[in-house]
Image (cartoon, rainbow, N blue to C red; front, side, top):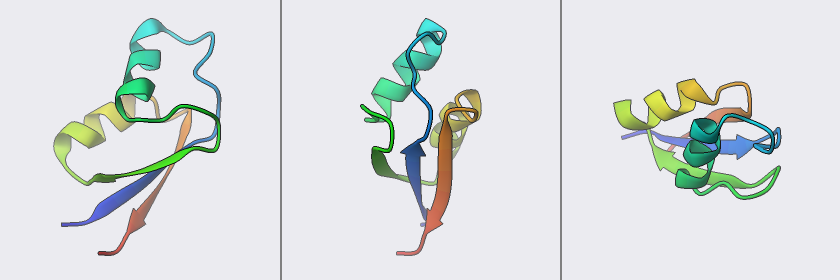
Length: 61
């Protein structure tokens, strides 16, 4: 299964509370922090809602 590297490129401060919760749930704390998550529908749904705050790359196993 493919993995996604998610990097927070814009601050979640002053955003909607729902968007801030998604950023926190993904494990992103500060600008330029990155996490690797599995590429599944639940992750894609969360990423779609905060697409304007993040940068996503596909990582090979």
